[in-house]
Image 1 (cartoon, rainbow, N blue to C red):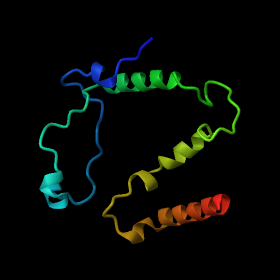
Image 2: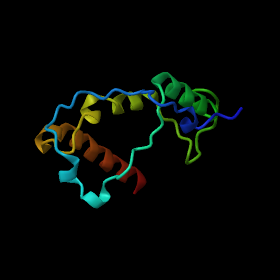
Image 3: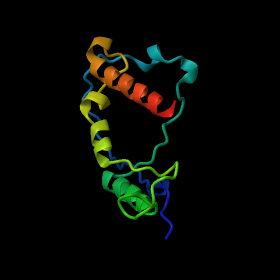
Image 4: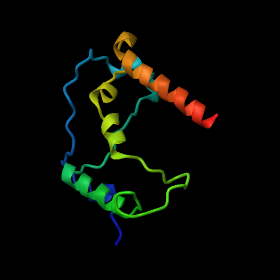
Length: 126
C-alpha cells in the first residue's frame, strides 16, 4: 500500500509542534543573516497534527528492514547495529540544548566527549 506524502496529509491550521520557551537573548534574524539569504515567501511546511506525523513516519519505518523488526546479518556498510541507548544518550539536554552562542566554558563536557570520540574513531579507522 502506498503511503501518501506528508504534504498530501497537510490540512490548513493543523499544528504538530510546540517549541520550548526561548531561554537565550533574542536576536533579530535580519541582524544575523544577510538579507539576500532570507526567505521571501512563506515557509511551505506541511500542516499536520502530531499524531498524523508519528503515524506517517512509523508506517514508513515499517517498510524498512531494521534490527527491531527483522533479522539481518551484520556486516553491510549501511546496516550496522545502532543500539537504542545511543539515541537516548544523543537526546540528553546536554547535547540537544546547546546553543551556538553559548559560552565555550559551559560546553566543555560535550567538547571533551566529541574530542574523545574523534580520537577513538581515528584510531579505529586509521
